[in-house]
Image 1 (cartoon, one colour):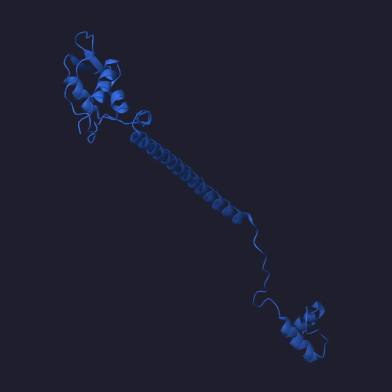
Image 2 (image 1 turned 90 degrees about the vertical axis):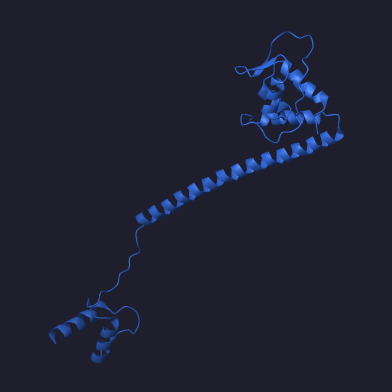
Amino acid sequence: MPEPKSYASEITEALLDGRTVKDVAQAYDRPRQQITALISRTDGWSLDPHTDTVVIGSQHDEPAASADVDLSSHDQPDEDDDFDLTGLERLLHRAEQSETAATRTAAEKARTAVDDLRERVRTEAAEAQIRDEISALEEKLAAARSQLKEIRPGKATARRAPGDGPTSKEVRAWAAEKGIECSPIGRVPQAIVDMYLAAKASA
């Protein structure tokens, strides 16, 4: 559908006011090449590549008549047209001020969606940062536990090596055979152990 004449006129007036092509393209949600096409097809207009603004060949008392350029399509944005957040805010603000109820409603829904999207991005970034911090803390904790194991003394496990002396069972059996009183439980008195060793040594 062709763009309404009043809308094209507003773009023309914005360019005549000295606004840059990039600014106008973002403010009116149009690809850059459509704005430059309008400039190239308008009598007496040219684009200053240094300032990105319209240069008029001669003075005009009235705004120059815009050429018949279709400003409705924006399916193919220019590679240099970086539609940033500022342009988005301008578009939403313009739509919110529209006299058409449907446009204001669409703007309200769009702003809600944009706000929701911003919050989702912030939340994801915060979660990613927290996960990174948790991972770093887990690595430090693992390293600390490893160091703790290295400096903690091991439990003493005193065990009688094989052949390091008679067992309590052997000494008790010998004492019972010799009629020497020895408790069946607890530690064997050292005196009885010595008697057992002496007997075995003289045997």
